Image (cartoon, rainbow, N blue to C red; front, side, top):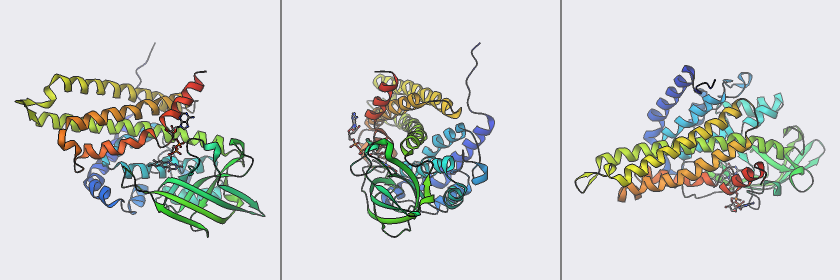
Length: 382
Ligand SMILES: Cc1cc2nc3c(=O)[nH]c(=O)nc-3n(C[C@H](O)[C@H](O)[C@H](O)COP(=O)(O)OP(=O)(O)OC[C@H]3O[C@@H](n4cnc5c(N)ncnc54)[C@H](O)[C@@H]3O)c2cc1C
């Protein structure tokens, strides 16, 4: 007998309401200013920490709340209500991308030194995997961590690193062994080490409130105990960590579509042409109905992946499908939402214009749509 699938309990809904209220009251009013300034205040990290938003699914012993993944789903969906995709990306990197691997693999010492302060928002965390010559091809990473007595000496460069200009700690992918995926390791890396430099903050098309940086490492000496998990098993750990990152991207796309469609319907009701509201024209009613239907399909595909992830079951195919489908769809939805706004859609002060720029990154960061297709094709035995 099939049972109704309702993942959100009353507790999840209460948590969702709290996040929405926080986003709408404390964040959204500043979203445009932060976008223009190219940054949001650092004090928001401890504020998120105080509200428990970085530690939702992290262990209670290390400052987390030990909740299930559906609480994270509610959080990511409501975070879009900040109307600052840049801030949302930065905060998701902190709680859902850079730190889970420390919780999973770190020693007590690493958790005390890096995880605890990151979940409190006292330290800013970043995930540093991509390099100037290795993005999609993670196995081609060239940044090395060479053993020298009880230390590791790190040399190389990382790029596109979110939170990179102000990170106190990096979850860093390095080469400790042979060429290819078998020689990679993960490590925690404090950025106050000699030889570490932020080369530049990259100027992006969208997500302006988040900083994205090019980083250099020159003979950076750190203790070997900063290795995360088993040496030369970094590729496997990274692929696991990517699952949370990609789910968050799919959920971000779905939430962005929600907001864009909501705004667009509102605008189309008010805006009149040829004697009637634009939204009443059949071409737009059909377009919006089509997008709402596709968005609902994206949501439930993603919820299916989230359910598997939440239960600790293999979900790589479903997560890759969800990221591919939701993030590609968000591009088409953004295009039409902007189009319905006419000239207003092209003016930056309008939220839909910012959203159109901001969603563009979703098919690129965290694994491109082409890489998602590669994974799905492989897991389909193609
Ligand atoms: C705003 C932003 C924030 C980011 N934040 C982070 C971060 O915090 N940490 C981090 O480590 N990285 C981050 N990234 C990097 C991101 O993950 C990479 O940009 C992404 O993985 C793609 O790598 P690449 O840019 O090197 O593109 P490339 O790998 O050079 O790919 C270029 C094109 O070739 C295609 N391609 C590559 N291989 C194949 C293939 N086998 N088949 C078909 N097509 C292929 C790609 O799909 C893409 O279209 C961020 C990127 C951006 C833009």
